[in-house]
Image (tube, rainbow, N blue to C red; front, side, top):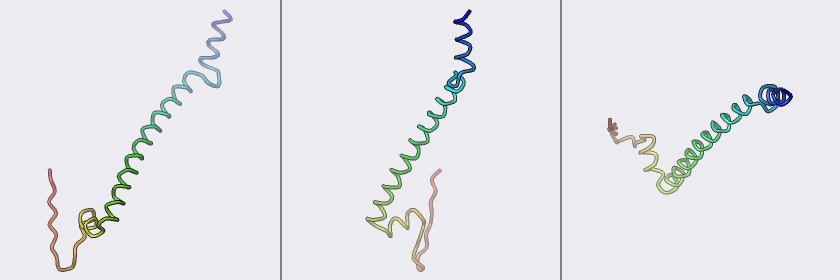
Length: 79
């Protein structure tokens, strides 16, 4: 009987009960997913920075569709 009461207290009423542990595990997984996402965004930003440093004009033309005043730019979107 004492073991059942102890188990119930530990499972449902303790500071570190199962529900709390389950929520914390979900939070950790979500934060790890967010970290991976932001790491990939950071890697892309570093690549963009290298491209900017190598050729500013080409980067501006490709990324932001910039052009000179006497040029016409045609944007072709692939489906």
